[in-house]
Image 1: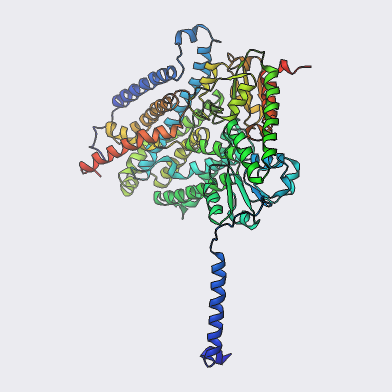
Image 2 (image 1 turned 135 degrees about the vertical axis):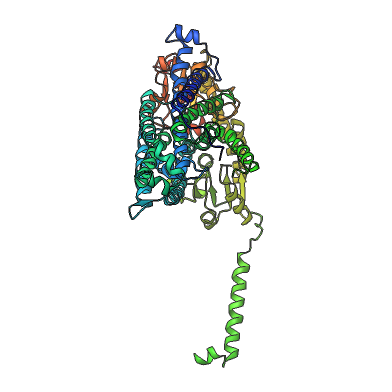
Length: 336
Length: 296
């Protein structure tokens, strides 16, 4: 979808990653300081038990960090999937993993777990792992797992999950149904640092795993036969990339529900600027996704004053039109 | 048999056809909605589609006239033997009509509009009352009493509830009001805003609602707002667990309610109902906000 970039050098990789990392650091600081309540960093640092410190370090920073982890995971998974499926419109929720995580989390909610307890994210993660197993096994035929099959099984699984969610919602009480809806739309409401650390750990494992297969993914994207001739084990690579992406998505959706558009927009944008080389695009997408979602959540919790919007609304409203613009631009250039 | 099929006995087939046609016409004609005849006297078969309405009907002494109630109706105990006609959010039109009511009383809920319209179109008299504020409560008690043919009982009920509310107000009247946050959900963190009956009860119970200026009736608050507004008492009416409430506000040590352990769980759902038990809800709130007025 873009002009062939110059060959990726170690220097270029380092520079791009460093720039994005600095932007992310700046984002984390800036977004922690923005909110419906005015907070002074000086006062917060001066008094660890002051109101400013409590707001900054116990309500805002967890959200910002969680947004970074979730945004990065979704964007990195999106980049890998778009390459794996050869489809620029692939988004991480297509896999079916999100549906599995959502059903398990909702069942935990309706079974009586408090929305704030760690039971819900843990159940959701278990659901994600289950969904990974089902989709991986379902798409496998004769020892082969084609991207086409993965996509189809994922879509069907998502449809089943959506139906299950609607069933659960119709049987639940009104207040429970509201909680379910909020969770499904995606929420970065303050979580404990322990949970955020756990999600970050799974994400980094997934990202590293993806990174190991980045060059193989590059070769695969150019064509299956060509890749095989160059020594890429196609089946193994496909399976590894799928599992790594699924782990990333599972970790993200378990703690924050289904936030859309991050995994679609961010890899796209970065591919236009940095080129399609996965060795650069994967870490860049992670960093870029983290920046995007941190800002989107800041908007969600600030724009209406004391009332907060679901973050999925902000990502859709910013991502949607921007994606249309990109698409039209590429259409005009004859690149689609 | 053969003659019948081949048409040898045409008159036999013809008679059957005509009979069948007449039968169908009668059946279908009978299904067409007929306009309700003017009620001869006070309604004897009543269906209530909201728990608050059920309580009002019983409080007016007309409980034995109820032939159908919504699934969430659980007070008073006598209502357990009344057949259910579906949920508050999604009442069943068929089951309601099968109870042959003279009067169906409903309150608008997110989801029952089409069902209530369908019941109306079927020719049943429907009374719609509102349950948002205290003013709505008085109006609905009077409307239901009027529809039941017992307006005097309605006035007595309004006077009684007003008096009991006044008692609660009097008990805390001399105490300085306290900053209160009332929540009805953990995640999302939904608070009681201005313009609701619960907000009016809160004020009556000697509290100042810290979420009153959020601009919405049921605002979803960001957690930092709770820290910034620093309520002295947090009333948790979310029906979630106490552990969940503790987890939610853990670490917010500058909030007086958290510091002093004044996060009070309200276990009873009465709180959300605009019915004759609002004085009990107000008393529960007052006890949570000003425990010293109820000690001893």
